Length: 280
Image (cartoon, rainbow, N blue to C red):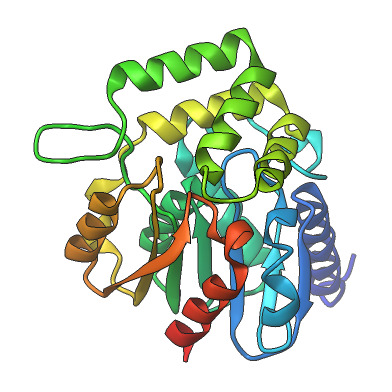
């Protein structure tokens, strides 16, 4: 092998590795525009959860969508039991995808636990342009001086149901998250995501969702951050949105008319308007 051939071979190897990584997480890039929106899904959801937002956003922005391990069309080897035993493993997935696509100055859009993952990513990837959080919560448990919305016993009971009757848990949680003010068909749609996801991986991520506290990193997110707070959100009450607005250095709180925990499903037009106004 001559010295001149090494860079070409290295480049080909890098291209192959990147291609494999993008296939592993079922990464799709669409749309046009100088700014890139990178979507972080909620618990048990694939990239299809954004289907009501992407057609309009793709006319102005480049969109990057992917599937977490155990969801959508992510490949089985995307999941690593040790690495994904903390949310940091999911952060590493996002960073790896960004590196494979050579993305700079991206805008992270995260929902629910995806919002928590986005906050952690913002600390470890300071070149982000901004962050958009849909129905976020840095900590779901009530503690002295902090109202997260759930008592420890409630979470333990919910996770116990998940172990004993996954389908029953999925049906109950999807109804609670969509809320009684929205059509039952949206709950059925969310339930479909839960049921299609790998049950074991979703159980593990659910534990991380409810037991991980990302409040310590919130003051370190030094980029403009939009907080979309819904009404009557059982998983992220108004107190949580107010907490984030106080502790994010550049946090902007928008109280939506949308109810429930999934405004990208129940109120896509209002969600789009808020995101577009924030991005300017």
